[in-house]
Length: 532
Image (cartoon, rainbow, N blue to C red):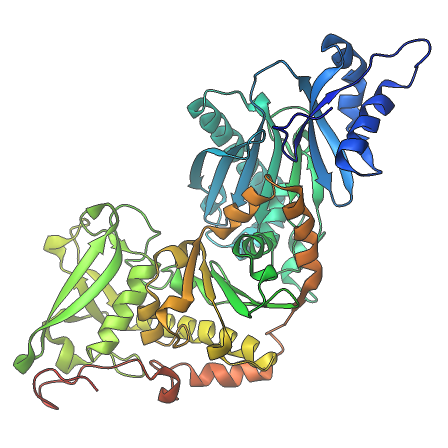
């Protein structure tokens, strides 16, 4: 018999105790009932659980809740509890980010989210990017150290998360983990050495189901971990999770999904086909190009607007917003894109991204022979020093925005469609949560589409990992998504390099691609602040 409150992962089973006349083995008795409930031919029992099964069935008088998971076509029993016991049964979704890790606790009996916690990836102390970490892993003991950092960090946060919900780690029976290819390897303790060396081969593309205790994760001893698959060295499980979360794989209309982190990863398609690519457009957009760059957090400038106060004298007022309304300490990615857009629209930087002394006026300073634009004077900053962006920083940002646009242009051209044919433009990750699409369009980083076509997915990786713990259909879809993706290698694509050169202007060498972008006309050129 089946409880009406069952979810995919928690099934109530009530079976007839064995007798001399009915001496079916305990495991066969249990799996036989589950096969009927699940309408399947294959149900296996975890070996550690199998060793305890006879005692558990008799202790609970053959009325139990079975915690299940589905590893591709195979159903697996990972836990057995007393059906009369009200102790909660939880799953844990994990977004294994290069910079930040997110844990989400889910009640497997109801599918509801109970709580969430995030923390900086401890591996940042070794290096902010995966390339540095991969080289570190080649050192003696390096891989073990990186693996220990991530596992110890997870275990600490699991305890903290459980304490906040007044449960024990022992109540967690299932985990779902989504991360890029390198992070997945470091999480599993697998060498990432060949990921960055031609022909760029991971140790494994489909980790599938692994026991938590084998990874060193301190939850229920029989708990299992479902690790999202990757397509290759540069398209990981976090993007598979993002596709699942967006529903891109089920739409009739063609849409695009972009996630900017260490790399810019893009997938284009619909329910019939998916094509993906990745390229290095992330570091500058994560503020790796400017001395005042910082990750999004209290005190980070996340929005910038510039007003023309006195038209006749080209005097401008910079308005800033910081996260938490704190004194400005630095600038995060969305603020940097806003800043570049506003500087361009006001004429403070030209189409080549060069600072214009005649317009910048007193806001332009020179340090060690390099021009700097003062965004926040020392008296107003949390650091007590000027917050500036250098000409070199602007140049680097323009290279990154050009790479971003070129990736998008190359993948759409590859399948013979235009940007205008896209029904939706999904933007994922922290980049998608805070970015102003209008600013990104103004500098030629994103295509000139109606703003309402842009849809922020926030953290789509944790969203997809959560879905994997709430539905067996979603879990089946993960492999379907992976199998349908065609990966486009940009490193050997000559068209990419040709397009990249054209995109290294603001917003682009071909202004017809960005008709909505209007630059302010200055007092020497026109009257009344007309735009051109």
